[in-house]
Image 1: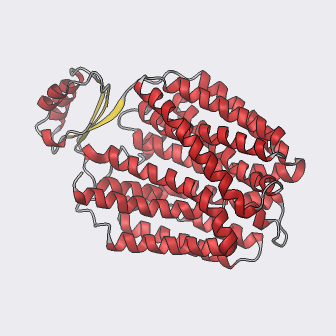
Image 2: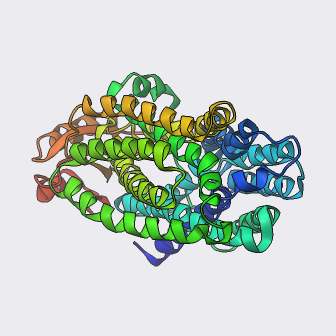
Image 3: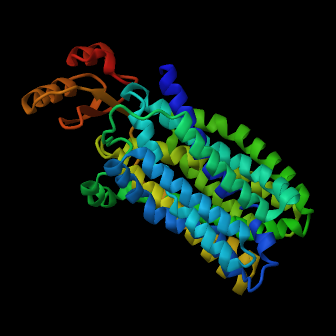
Amino acid sequence: MTSGERHATIALASIMSMRMLGLFMILPVFALHAQELPDSTPTLIGLGIGIYGLTQAILQIPFGMLSDRFGRKPIIYIGLVIFVLGSIIAALSTSITGIIIGRALQGCGAIAAALLALTADLTREEHRTKAMAIMGMSIGSSFILALIVGPVFYHWIGLSGIFWLTAMLALVGIAILYLVVPQPIISSFHRDTEPVPAQFKRVLKDTQLLRLDIGILLLHLLLTSLFVVLPIALKAELSVDKHWLVYVSVLIASVIVMIPFIIIAEKYNKIKSVFVGAVAILGLSQLGFSYLHQSLIGIIVMLFFFFTAINLLEASLPSLISKIAPADSKGTAMGVYSSSQFFGAFLGGISGGWLHQHYGISSVFAFCATLTLIWLLLAITMQKPSHLSSHLLNIGQIDVQQASELNKCLMQISGVEEVVVIVEDEVAYLKVDRKLLDMEALLKCSENKHNISE
């Protein structure tokens, strides 16, 4: 990557991570604070935690499409301003209803798709995968950091202070976008990062992709449900100002344990085995929580298993989407996947709160264990994914005849399994087996040799 590409990607990743950090920081503390608010009920507490997911799921694809029409930066500015307004409303609110309204507005600032599209505009095809990996890591790191610092900041500045901090982080994001992120010379459509409306039906009818969409929905349903009740159970065993010690210890341990399994999954093509095993561990952790949530040791052990499974699944699911989605439909598949993820967060909040209110904490975990069993059956019966990778080839301006000839040439290359040449995009979208790919032959097929990406 050039220094310009690197700086732009890091700047955009920082905007993404600061926004997500603000959303995640309340997870380990909101249920505790909201119990003291007027007219608060467990159902409303769950709604307050998960409502951002509903508005985010509804608006993120439209925001991305609007950025195609009106420009990336203006839409991102608008989204961040809406996010700031939502954070301020939540910070000033003294009732659960006000916080719910603020959280809903936070989700309305759905800039993820526009940020990814701007990242694609500012990076060449050969570095697109690296840039997207950096964006993904920024989200994962913000989640881990939020669970650790959330209880600490709550002890220092309270929930209102966290919302004010969230607003300030979004304002910093606006400053970074204005001062650091360059305006792209050309803003074009990218099928590898953006959804194509005409492809939604095709993607939704793909049962293998649908299994993964259901999977990410259930994963975030479980995650949000957990934080509707876990802080309450943990408070009974440990003072709130020490909750961060539990989170930091289990998160570090789970990441260390996860790494070898990720290597095994990718290096030895065992991704399905690791994936199914992670879903099974996730279900067992939910069963364990249902019986052991009144024990500090039980909570810590089950949290370790839970986060180990979560980390494995969060790493595996996007990789599976990339492997399974048609070469020219990756952006559409990821758009549906991302919307499913946020909708799962909403369902987790509302279902976790309702079950807690009517049937107690154990019922939340029992419900989640049942859902995980359904997911396990879907995972076991899914097809073994091929060990293929997405591969972009910048082809420049060519006509239909040249595109047909290029397609034939590429399909004859060892390791190339699928080719879709889109003349108007000036890109060929490939699915390749990297172990078998003949790069020399690929170079010969393209006059723009310097634009080939791996």
